[in-house]
Structure formats: structure tokens, C-alpha cells
Image (cartoon, rainbow, N blue to C red):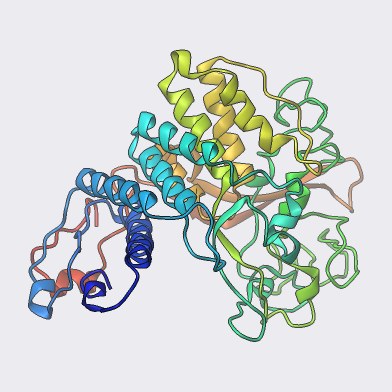
Length: 419
């Protein structure tokens, strides 16, 4: 497109500039993901022949980060703040992705400035209901900056099936939450982690007084499922969700995902039209906060606390305001905030990689809910998948391997370390 749009005659040049900027934004978005997955990758800016493709070499990740920054900066200049046609990228999207890329690359001043530029547009704001953002009711929210547009019957997906409780549709669920995520949600009244003294956490009533984003993201015992039934994953419950059920797609941790699961899709779980989000204003605010925290000193000011607190003061979240200004404490807080605010939106893998915490958070068995043993009242049991142990080698696993087929086709490509 970029090579041929100028061949079109009698076309409005403002339109050409906008479409070129949209194309550059989409290409930069793709490269953000490629670099975070593979590290050094070929940087392709012109159409290649088969012969070219067999000879191209990898470009360093640092060079690609610079390319992304330049492309998105130039694109933002030619993009409108608001698009008439829903789903197209805007100035805020280009700047928001620039902020994301700079944060991933460790360029904190650039990340902070790009995020601040989005905030200064005055176009986007935090939606008052966290739950609505991931259902049809929230699709027109200005918080959702960039999303894949879907429509029932026309261009649908089956995310309901993907996350569905086994008691609703058997042998369909593909992904379930783990204890690591569920435990990350703070106590609502105290704002403290559940394992901290004085938090108020009751292991016999584990979901009471928790950050409401937990209940908006995950189905826990006692929740009402889309068919009106109560979720019961306790062993011996007799439901299709029994945690010790032999069904291969029943939850083995005791939980199911709720985010993006709309009750209105229950009767046609393969025909879902909820838009899937690529960029939210909430992420921009967290990027601004994290970049400022990493810069430290005078960069940690009230605007940082305000950015975090905007997320916490939604009417259906209402978490305690953040008031601390210590850099180390704020760093831990904003990392947890990203984990719970952006859960299952495609950020966690890249956060683990850029923070270099894989060896701390990945190895070990997968654990699930802690519950009172029905056969032994007063005894707590924690579900654990002992037959599968996760491993992480920091010398290898911070990048994916270059696909074997690509190496076979091009001798100039180099495999990532350890593969």
C-alpha cells in the first residue's frame, strides 16, 4: 500500500496522508509484538521478492525500537484525534503504542512523554464501569482506543466457548485462571495483599472484600453463570465443574475466566461479537505512571498517583487511593496494578520478559483455589496440578525460537540462544 498509493490519481492528499499513517501504525504495532517475542528480527520496509526473502538478515532490536518510535511519531502527526469510521487508528492510538514501545524498550522519558501526549488530547477517559468494557455495553467507550471489531453473524468469534464453564458447554473451555493471578487481587477495605498481616483476608471466605476487578475478571464459587445456575467447583458438588471431574475441559483450578464472556452470547457461544481490545486508556495511564516511577526523583509527583487512582475510582472498583511516593513501593504497586487491571488482555508475557522476572514467577506447579475440604470441615486444601511442572531457563526462555522453517529458507538468519 505504501509503495503504490501515490500512483492513484485524483485523490485527496489529506486522505493519502491519513491512510499512510494508519498503515505505518499497523506495521509498527506488528513489530512491537515481533521484537518482544523474538528479539532481533528482519526489518522489512519494502516489498520483497522470493530471492530477497532468502537473503534478508536480522536487524537489532534496538534499531527496530528506534524505527517504531519514528514511525509512530510521524504517523501521529497525520492522524486525527477522532475517526469517523469506528475501529480505525487515531492520533491517540499511535501515541499510545509509541508509549508502549518506549516502555518495553526501557526508554522511560519517551514513554512518559508519549503517554502524557495522549492524556493531553482530552479525547479519552476512564470508563466508570470496569465490567462494561468487556461486554457490548462498553464498546463505544472512549477508554477503548484500539480494538478488533467484531459483529455477530458477520464477523464473529467464539470467546464464550473458549472460556466457558464446563457445566454450560462440555469439553469447550481452553484456558483457566491460576492461583498466581487470583492471589494478586488486593483486599478492598485495607488495600493490602492477602498475605500481608492486617489485610483482613479470611481463607475460609477468600473472595469477600477483594478488589472488585477479581469478580469482573474471574468466575469464582458462588457466582451466577450465564445460564442462571450457581458455579460450584467443590469436589463432590455433582456439577460439571467439579474440580476433580475427569472431564478434560473442566476447571482444575476451581475458576473460569469471565472477562469478555457476555451473558447475551450464552445461546450462541460460537457467534460472539464483543470487540477484543488491543489498547485501552487505562494502559496509557499505567505506562505514564510506570515510566515516571522508573525515572524517579521529581518525576514521581501527584500526577503519577492521580493516573493510578483514576483506575481505582471507577464506581464498580472503588479501591483505596494510592498515596505512597517511595519508588520501590510504587514500582511493586504499579506492576501489580498492571497484572490485575490488564489481566488476559495480552500484556503479562511481555511484562514478565521486560521486567526479567520469569525465573521468579514461572517455575513450579500450577495451583488453584484453596477450599474447605467437604470431607474434613475446618481443613483447608489447595488444588495443585502436580503432574505438570513449569520450567524456566533465563538463558533461553526470554525469547521464542526463530521458526525452523524460516531458518531452512534463509541461511542468513540466526537462531536465538539455547534453541
